[in-house]
Each structure stands twice: as C-alpha cells, then as structure tokens.
Image (cartoon, rainbow, N blue to C red; front, side):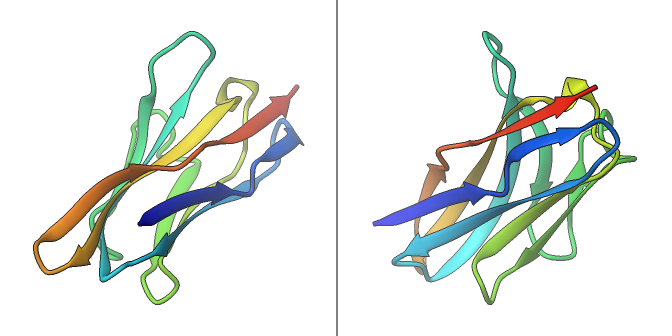
Amino acid sequence: QVQLTESGGGSVRSGESLTLSCAASGNIFKLGTIDWYRQYPGKQREFVATLPTATITRVADSVKDRFTVSRDDAKNTVYLQMKSLKPEDTAVYYCRGLIFKGPGDSVVEWGQGTQVNVSS
C-alpha cells in the first residue's frame, strides 16, 4: 500500500508565499513522475507542474513566474513553492504520483488535496 499526503495549505494574503509538500509513504521502491494539479469549485483539475526527476521539471505557463517545484527523493517528498500569491490561486491543490513498489511494479496515486485560500 502506498499513499500520497499533501500538506502546507492554508490562508494567506495576496502577495504572500506558501510551500506545499507531497509526501509518499508505504511500500516505496522509488518515485516516478510526480505532478501537481489544482481544482476550483465546480471545475476540473488543472495542471500546475510536473517533476519527472529532480532536474527535469515543468511548470504551467500561467504560474511559471511565481511557482517553482522541487523534489527530495531521499525523503520521498515533492514541493510546490508558491510566491506572490493571488486570489485566483485559491483552490484545492493535489499531487499525483507514479510510485514504484518494485522494478516494473508501479501504481498511480492521488493525494487527498490541500486547500489554499488567498485573500485580497
């Protein structure tokens, strides 16, 4: 059994920063690609960032000037650093991960989400 758990969400004012974490736990051989998504009420989840490896990352054009991503494979944890937050960043943020339980044995899991609220 493997699990992804997001943390770090909360309520901030416009212009402030937050760092979200996505930690994998359970029977983990290694982490594959980890993605971040966000979801507005009544909308589908939208792509925010992807991290195939620690050195290969891509962030959505809509946030690339403000959001950065990183991963610490030793801790099985991925981070989403968000700065200069805007009210339109208010959403539930999810991580999705390809997790290897062994060579050739992988699963895709979603975290439960963490709420980010940005007030003006």
